[in-house]
Amino acid sequence: MVSLARPLPGAVGLSHLRAYEWEAADGVCGGSPHLHLVCTEAYVVTGGRGAVQTLSPQGYREIPLEAGAVAWFTPGTVHRMVQGGDLRVTVLMQNSGLPEAGDAVFTFPPEVLADPERYAEAARLPARSGPEAEAAARRRRDLAVAGFLPLRAALEAGDPEPYRAFQRAAAALVRHRVPTWRELWRAGALAAAERTGAQLDALEAGAPEYLAESDAFDTVPSRHGGWGMCGRRDEYEVPGATLHQDG
Image (tube, rainbow, N blue to C red; front, side, top):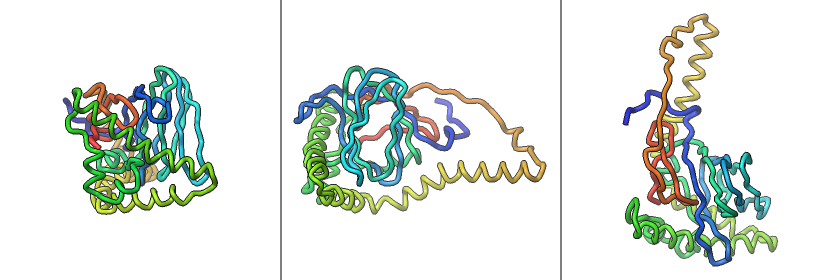
């Protein structure tokens, strides 16, 4: 595939999701609850219907999703996409590259979160496709739901401490990744912002020569039907786009 000279606007990540239709222990069909540590994520609903269930300091919320709706959640917000009927979304992810470098933590039970090796094994997919990958994706979804439901129940009962404890455990799990994330941020989102600053400086100085470097780009999904956290995922392997994530 041809490599692009520039990332997508703002160095965002991009993918398309079709929400899982597997029924969980609570009778709800959908994906794996998780949070991001430094990335805001947005769902742009392109078809079907469903909802996203969230846990935040404001409590538990279920946001309806239907074609044309947009929902987004900031770092630390636990989110779970649930199926209502052929739900399809386009995902826009801040700081492209960071989610693929581990900026997503499943709501596994506390005893799993407390053991990095056990967590990594539970989150890992053994293959990119096939029955073994599907079975593993479903197991980790079920384990994440098993940890999510007590967090939700506690918040609904007015006790935020289990949710806060999960946030602390998630932060501890990924702390060692921060130097790598910092480099990805510098090369992606920060570099994009700095290019804008340089362009503004050039315009102010009456020197728009950088416009001679303008160009147009296009691409198509490099992979269809991957096993994402929330559903089957179509991915784009271009700078500034969401790449495949095994865990």
